[in-house]
Length: 261
Ligand SMILES: Nc1ncnc2c1ncn2[C@@H]1O[C@H](COP(=O)(O)OP(=O)(O)OP(=O)(O)O)[C@@H](O)[C@H]1O
Image (tube, rainbow, N blue to C red):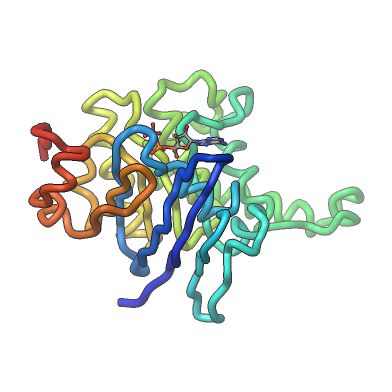
């Protein structure tokens, strides 16, 4: 196994508040890991720091690829996305008035970029690329049982389906790492079970490294191979689900008596 993502002493300071405090850890290529911790622990802030949405105040975020190592903290968010990191947000950010297919296709346009001239003149290559984008979007929708909704406006879908579309859209750019911010929030048990199958598929069929923030401990303990625990911005534990469940500091900071795994 090799490391794909490495955080070295990452901190994020907002005015007088240290939201992420000297966090270092490594994520193995192809693994499925979770970031957990109480409300306000700094989980979303850390996602924002890794993906350069809000670059870290200090520390380094390294992406190790076959071509070499890239320092993500020196890149803009769009460059980080191009390097193969994609994410979903706590609040769903689909284009509500666009069809499900178009939501997925739009995400792909950056990887299938056609020249301005070819687009304006509608040259044959433009139509070829358009067809390729549509074909791949439809393939992804089929893989994730979303074909019946392909022509539905995304905003009209039930909540759980919208979340699934968002994850499939994040996958459309063929990322190396996907970051999911509370994917099970607001889902009923049936939707959560579907979501767990979807997340497993990202790893098993698409070989994507998955990093997720989640408060649903049953989902986390069942899915994650490794768990990182944040509390007040600090990494207080890092281990397998069994190690985390047995960690007294984690139990008193976060899990309490309520781990239903
Ligand atoms: N842009 C910002 N400016 C100032 N403070 C911020 C900013 N973003 C986050 N914070 C603060 O940083 C801390 C960490 O917030 P963050 O949203 O990362 O926590 P979280 O672990 O994701 O919480 P939750 O589980 O509730 O989503 C909080 O105290 C929050 O108020």
